[in-house]
Amino acid sequence: MIATDDDGLIRLQKLLAMSGVASRRKCEELMLDGLVEVDGEIVTRLGTKVDPTTAVIRVDGKRLPPVSPHVYLVLNKPRGVVSTMSDPEGRRTLSDVVAHRPERLFHVGRLDTDTSGLLLMTNDGDFAQRMAHPSYEVDKTYVAEVDGEVTRATVATLLEGVTLEDGPVTVNEARIISVSGRGKGAKSIVELVIHEGRNRIVRRLLEEIDHPVRRLTRTAIGPVQLDRLPSGSLRELTHDELGELLDAASL
Image (cartoon, rainbow, N blue to C red; front, side, top):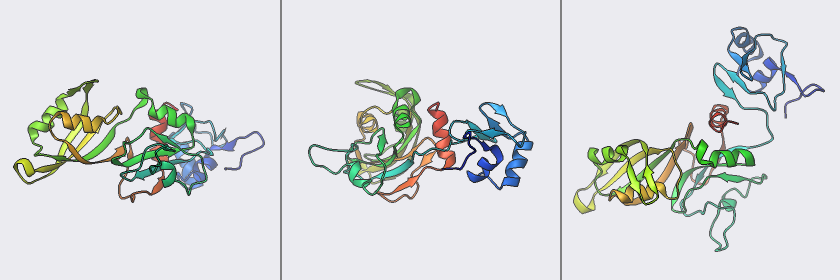
């Protein structure tokens, strides 16, 4: 934790520097240039003190997460792992994957057992609940290997919207990554960006347009990218990633 005065406050430029924004001198310059905002107001007075646990701070428009005892993690969930912390059937769960962590972690949303990829983990219950709520869902990017040859017409169909038994699905973006083979033996790899998180939504969507999924990976949630994080590994969210998610969840 960052050391504060007896009243729980800290000089703003010191907090910025300790948070890794820049050197103390450079942080002072940012303040004087009117690029630092606290709770909606631009702060230029160098002696200003703030509460590092509650102040909503932005530097050049970007949210700086508050000082917190919580952890916010990215997990590359392996295929075959159940998105729960326990399983009465004895299957491998998220608890097994994160057993080395000392915190009591929650998963933000879920991925079905056969889907791999990006899952957020945290010990901040409010954050987990808010991020999983339909009102605050952010864009999610998936890469799917599917049966059949996906064409430009298929992409157009996806972007026009497909209706499933539980309602229409809006696809924000869709693109073809590759197509191999022809006829019945063809397979394609496509990338989809969708906003919602209904159960098995991507698999059901692609099944509906006659392209059953062979393999599915979630590669991004909002600003958070999976990149080359190995399967089963964790990393912490960056300040910029966490800041954007806190804004998206109105926290």
